[in-house]
Length: 264
Image (cartoon, rainbow, N blue to C red; front, side):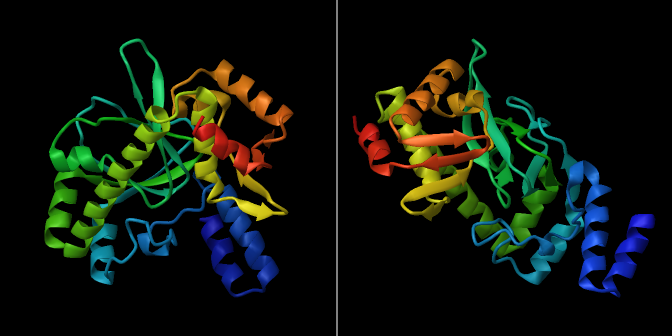
């Protein structure tokens, strides 16, 4: 109640007061995330599931979805579990992974805001094929299977977006196959992964700077290797002046060297 009052008063005051009101509202929200209930308030870019949907479709999506916040490390859905619904990532990031009989885990994809989890399983009527675990505090919108299937049947634009997302998931799987199958060495696989991330980095003076909030263990799971091997390779990259890792900031100083490793 107090948070809502502060926010309401803040809208009638100056910028400084509004900043304090927003900060207090965020501090009192679950896991430090701003509470956003209306999907129309998420600005997630052209590849988001929400992009291009009509106002009527978004209004119906708002009616049937249930938004929840999750802490870091929360398992949202489990491989082999009956597919009860889909989750749309609204805030945060989620790793999608699979585990073999020996307990070895591989991360197939890092889902970003705007992506849909469990879509293929719900459409096909199969159990979830992957386990989804939050990498950071996240907000997800859940829609039950029956409601989601009725939703895409009655809203053509939502059906198109679902189809496009399935296509993107297929393309992502192809990328994983290329990364693991075409690179014969573990340094080459790690180099290909870092080069893929360079596209979203900031370039200054020939150096690419990007955020990489992943552990060495998670990097290893992305390329089908071990934590010890990834740590050793990153150390070798640093000694050769190719990349440097400072906390969660990765500096790529020699993209050409990474490209050469991909074809070696």
